[in-house]
Image 1 (cartoon, one colour):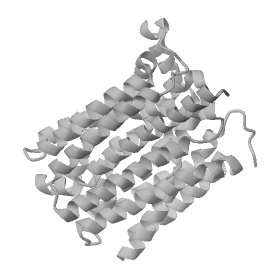
Image 2: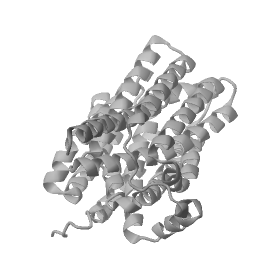
Image 3: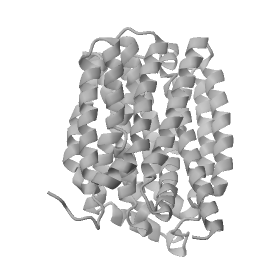
Length: 397
């Protein structure tokens, strides 16, 4: 590899880290203020779940189209445009929540659309860089996302403690995220599958429909759904459960949320070494069990220190499922955009069904006990983990 190529690849790697990190900053900055938005709107757990459902609907709208969008316009342009849309959408939430539920729902739909398309595009770019480097790095890109979520959550805790308004906090975050990402995507490498006449004439749609019939792709998608539900339930409900069921202050609830995110960051940063040494399947099974133990501690601990420990194990166990699922979907470069789009579409169904399910259970058995629904999907992920084995890797007993 020439010096110039190596330099360009390093710059591209840094740019992918930036786009993962700042998506995390944006998402956690919003999530950290969910309790205050809920209180201003006077929402019950079930109604809050329905409002948050708008995010999932937006993402589900974007994801089936994302593979074609990336193939047509490239990952660089897709991420840049979606960063601008996300900034506009969250600004709409920050201002609109003062006027009622409707403007918040509309803004959250746009926010979900932006995150869905952005997610697919940056994972496609991350898979390209991973292949050019020649070693496992995708989980570390997702660790960048987790670093961003930790930073966003801690900033949110600080904003709450200082009494900073939701509007001021979120708008400052949006400006920072949009400027940083639009600048970073200039260093993305060219996509391996360039736009073609076949894509423009409908061939891309035909290939996408064919991808939806691939058994391995569908199994990976359901696996990612299980881990997305596990991760998403923590992001959406840990703070609420701490405040409502453990009786902590808003600042403490946000700190437990930050511990969950920090644990995910640690798992994603150190996970690649475990994946390279032991393989995808054994590592993912062990982490699923870890997440299950943490979830049980969090739900049944009934003491704040135990909840902190449970959130740590829960986050650590949930750390690698989503990024390794994206890598598995992109194992074959030529089919990566379509397969990543399909897997992401299935995975994001967790965000479609998760918030209203936990919210509905919260109305009947408390949010804390409602989180036990996550355990069912964690067990399912253990059974599905063999689907993530690389095609060239032999099965082991």
